[in-house]
Length: 77
Image (cartoon, rainbow, N blue to C red; front, side):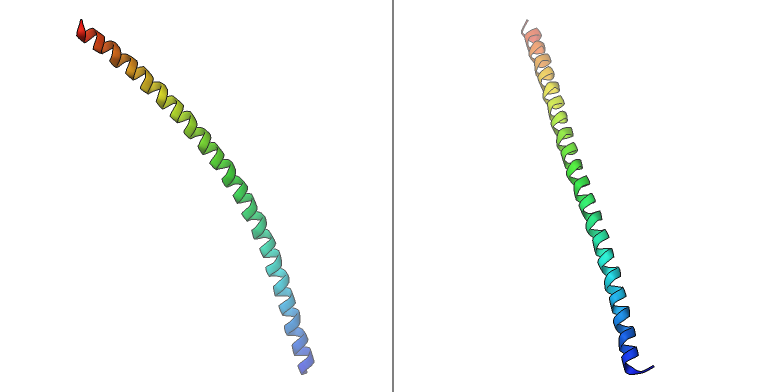
């Protein structure tokens, strides 16, 4: 094999590798975007769950305060 053929072979291998890496990079970008979208959705779901739990907690606190108030009235009698 002469020098030009060896050079051509190396260039072809480099081009093939660059094409593969470019495709891999595109796939990774797509996967990253999908994961970012999923993360955003999960953050919204967590925020909604936190809000719901806070509302439930406030209701329980209100009921407990009401019960404690009634017990205090009974103790005063």
